[in-house]
Length: 72
Image 1 (cartoon, rainbow, N blue to C red):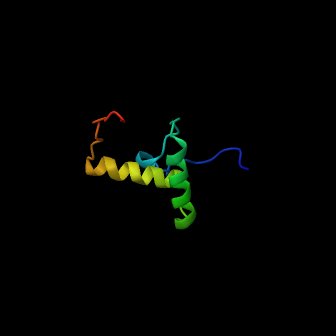
Image 2 (cartoon, rainbow, N blue to C red; image 1 turned 135 degrees about the vertical axis):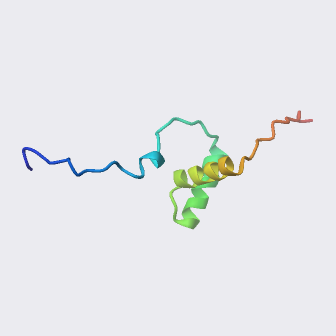
């Protein structure tokens, strides 16, 4: 390893704006199971599938239906 490095010609990471941020999110077991099953068949990690799904919803401007019905 060198004692000093020359960063004078370095450039910023062009993908820095797309870096992911770690957060804590609480999901119910059936939701996790659904994405894990999808991951097993697609070969894509389940957390990546969740991210892709949420990004798609955000890009399309999907709105959650907040109409709750009482069970009989």
